[in-house]
Image 1 (cartoon, one colour):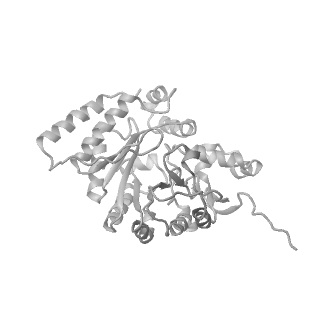
Image 2: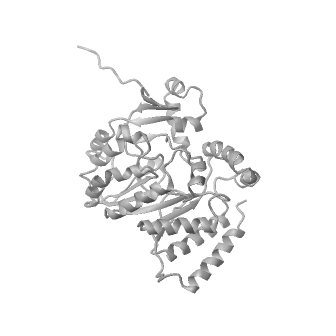
Image 3: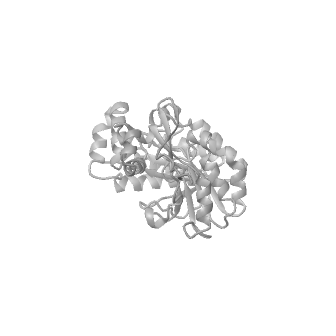
Length: 354
């Protein structure tokens, strides 16, 4: 009788330029609310993300997995700092679809009326998905579920590949796709999100999803103080999002936890040196921007969404989504609404985020 061999932990799957993809166990594929402190179940088909966005808040999730792997994890990262390993050593959850099906037959999965977010920590349609199709496998495994609220969060137009399966899911569940977009300025986006799809590609994806009858929204998250928060920039984004067919938009200001700080602040020093002192003061002892900044930003975004007839979404600090607010009964660019927005934009310009 032959011995059963366990798979090699974090074995190398493939290498592409400066990226390595490693296999990771998909045991416990669903993250329950009790484990995450969020008000929803979640699935992250990958650990780490090759898009390498400087502001990403999820870098600690990769470090935890590597540390749990002990010596094997150390060999995989080869003394690479955790913030860099997050975007250069991506872990692929093998057999994720099978694990979803197993969980659905047990009590370790969401039930009718629950919310499920796919991509709460890392992008489910990052470049690895073209090769490994883990997210597609997960969606196919969910085909028999009913009456869930399913949200897919991504900044990749690759999500349009799966329009057919998303439409099937939407017949029996509430399905939303949230495209992340923090600026429509292509050159600025490249400085902030060096490996992510262009804003134009994401807006085309919004249009394709909307034309397919899917509920598509945009996450303007995070708004970066002093960089992407100029009123004209925000209005250009909201206008193009609405024109592309999105139904709603959510916005929130940058938060900087320890792992994110080690990647983001050096980028500020290099790319936006005039903001360095303000950032170091603003985020030295806190994770979030000031209350006044966040309140002013939300007020401005609410008015812009009303102007362009988008619902607005807000998120509490615990990550739960507040109910969508319907757009105001805007009938166009009236003199009154323009004045209200102008007053708000002046307020935002005068805000200090430290």
